[in-house]
Length: 458
Image 1 (spheres, rainbow, N blue to C red):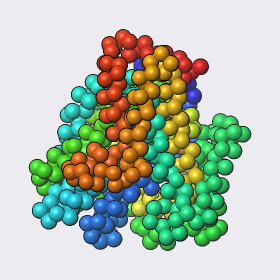
Image 2 (cartoon, helix red, strand yellow):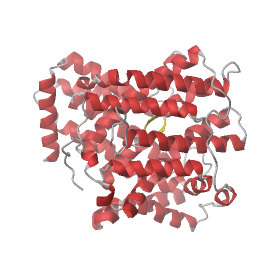
Image 3 (cartoon, rainbow, N blue to C red):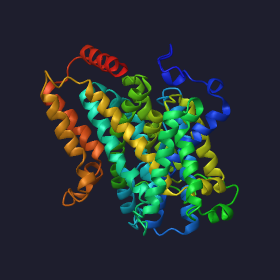
Image 4 (cartoon, rainbow, N blue to C red):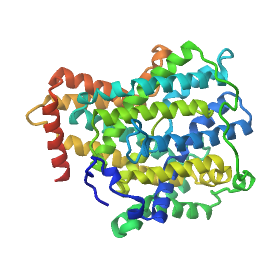
């Protein structure tokens, strides 16, 4: 595939369906879905169980989430007039909203319908202010971008490591069998990357996951009972739990969460721009953030929660080298199908987490490596202040990772901000860069970005 920008300025548009081939495109889209599935269904499971919903209602939440994931992904990757970044982006429910939503849902004055009202308001808020956040792009020179992307990758490694050990909450967490299966998947992916060519190399993660699932089935770790019990078709009805209830405090809380989401999405879009060699300017960034808002609004309508760009899939783009946004479009269609066909969703759910762990280690490491590559072209020799920017920002970004209770005594309203290592790193890097280097002019920023891009290609 052509890695360079098309005449329209979007390298993601250079690979069409005909160039990739329908069968290969479908498998590559499925690969993205498998990578994000565990994270995509985690939030409805957590919230549904915390609110004491019945198993049938929780299952419906999962199906609704998958359906809305598909819609939001299509809005983001395929795009609409003035909406969508049109890059290989998969959308999923953000974990940043879990704690406040559980607090809302367990409050008898708010409840589940109150959550959906707040989700709708926060989605509309993000849709309206997204372009304004996009204008903050000059605050993200390479020293800031590289630091934030590095922290994104390092933060995600916790997810991959926990998957490899069998998943958080697993009574056999860390069992040698889980670690062995994860290692097997990792070896398969690396072997295909080293020796295979063409589609086999591009689909190395998918092939590794399938091979790992077959291997895990030999040890009785693959259970298909839910697949047999799941229905073939289900309709996702808007407002299935009743009309949304709009409550001021809850709505303001989720609006604050969406500010966090948009700042995190900015870092993820910039990371994807580096991996795909597809530049993102202020206008395009605003369109991407606006899609986050529209996806969240759709989530509130279809009985689910706030959406953001899923960082897990950024690493997959780096591993496979497939930069076409049409892969994400197909992934979105697959998510829609999973939401409407519960039996397919149950089949994907049957993939053991230890299998995903082997893939996660290499994918999330690729995100961190992208950040390191950007920082490698930053001038540290003549500007030692850049060392302080990176050092302190990475330190702040790792606080929630290495000390989850560090901010336990802080006001509860600040927890959505303080529990995001990515947000802490971004704020710290931006502030320190302004303190040491100033804002600079756009011409200098463009020249520096061109220099970094040239160094990365070299």
